[in-house]
Image 1 (cartoon, rainbow, N blue to C red):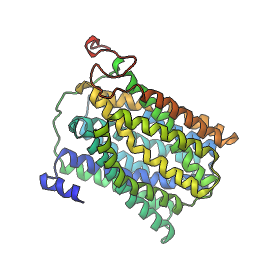
Image 2: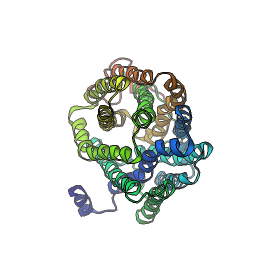
Image 3: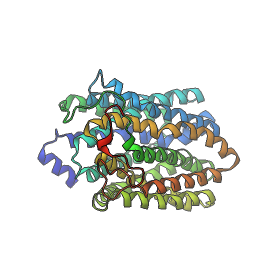
Image 4: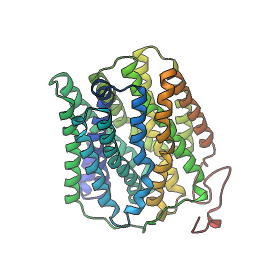
Length: 405
């Protein structure tokens, strides 16, 4: 609360406050969709692991196409497009419960996902443009914390709605999605259109000197799909978790992040991206390996919590890019990086959904292998990244780059 009082004292119509407000709007929809998904899919649409894999791959297609954001910026300002994306996220979530079938869930998921992935792309771009490099890790941590706080409210309401009021899936979806859309519309009306500090490129940007950033983003997308798609599914299919139990698990995750994410942001600012990434990937190797062999529901839930705690360390990839990037590249590269992040995400859910039918353990051991690859990449991050010092091995001097590169 002291953070909000500080922001309000300096003026609530500031860019940082808008970023926090929009970040708080996202979980109202996405946390609702996420918390209900496995139970809704299994109980109402008769999903197996194969259908879940297909759905998750479809969900990631808009992320793969996130590079198209840069072309939309030719006709609409970045800030306005962020508001439109939030509205689409809310709409897709709100209508999900009205289509309890395999095809219906596929279609509503794609609608929701277009809004979600476009907004997330734009949030990264706007955050790195609006926030000073010295404060970026801490502010990005606060953005995660605000999202986590909203998630707590959302998961708590889902638990109450499910356990005490026995509210149907469709009405929970409507409430969550509608709240996101209302906040987006109110923000659009209340906040001014901020001018760009640096004019952003309105075309795709791929630069050789960003190769390590691209590789880290690619492996992050591949590895994270194992957690997003299959860790929650494991809880429901193998251990029989109910909607209320899944919501409670998400609630605890969010509570931890409110406290931990700003601390992690400050820690990254103090100790650097290299150490943060190395710590994250060593931890994830252990977590994924443990997932492969867990037979106890309590231990599985504990692993889920630990796994989720590592998410905040992904701030280090964003601030690493901010330090090495040409400021004019940020918007275009945000879209390209989201597409790179989702190349594996489009394929992995379907492919590993089939692997899941034969061996769930093999899916999580593959996650361990991905974390090991990420660790090797992290060891190549310099202690002080900057233009011209983007990697320890495979460095491409900034001064030798052409504009067309």
